Image 1 (cartoon, rainbow, N blue to C red):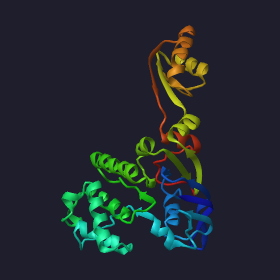
Image 2 (cartoon, helix red, strand yellow; image 1 turned 60 degrees about the horizontal axis):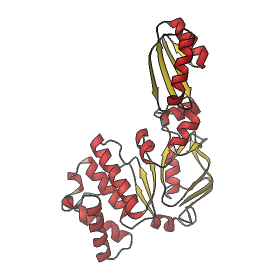
Image 3 (tube, rainbow, N blue to C red; image 1 turned 180 degrees about the vertical axis):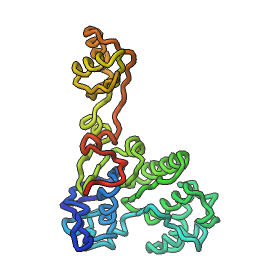
Image 4 (tube, one colour; image 1 turned 90 degrees about the vertical axis):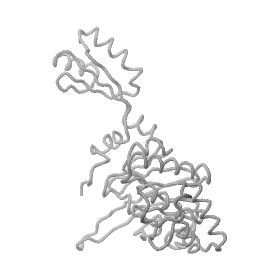
Length: 313
């Protein structure tokens, strides 16, 4: 569905060339749900705009569903849906009419557009809202309408740019329920960006992380966490001297009476570690384990958080 080689984009800023995306190679197979992560300024939005034909690449190539974004943008647009961060529906039509109009813009006959609109109204639980204006809907309802607009022409690939940003937890969960239902119903390939790392961790079968315009990690969330971050063990000792001893034994770090270390398998490592500390005369007053997060992966790779607002120049 997505095939890029050396995809790059430069901008001119005050007579200087700024490279936003640096030679991205990316392949996404049909039916995958891929989360595209990175801090603000990392190149996510620029990459997304190139893949959706909204911005021409400076160099490199990108093919979407077998069509080149630069030489055949119309064919690409016919095969993709795009749900941006802003609301896509206007205010002049009722919800159902808005969907029908969108379908007509994609070349569907009137009867076909109406049937498709009704199908999506039912699938996305929008039927009770069919005769309301988009401006009267809640945030979660409007996002479901945006998704319906992006699916009206039955695209092979749907791009979702921050689909749940700004929604309350209940609405976010509802949006994701519908996203997963769409995938199950239509087999649509989904490529999304999100700032909610737990969404990518729990929902996406593949995570791609971009930083400084380059892809720095690509794999399942479990693979990235196991290979690049590892589990965490935190123990508390009776004294600071005991903490220093525990840190030397484990190769971890001591902060006061707290010792932290990273291991491949915390559940399997902790019992032996506690026995070793006991044999060394270290009194452990508490111990806990934790699985790493995707932010831990990014922190290991870059020394920064995925939620940082800006990246270094």
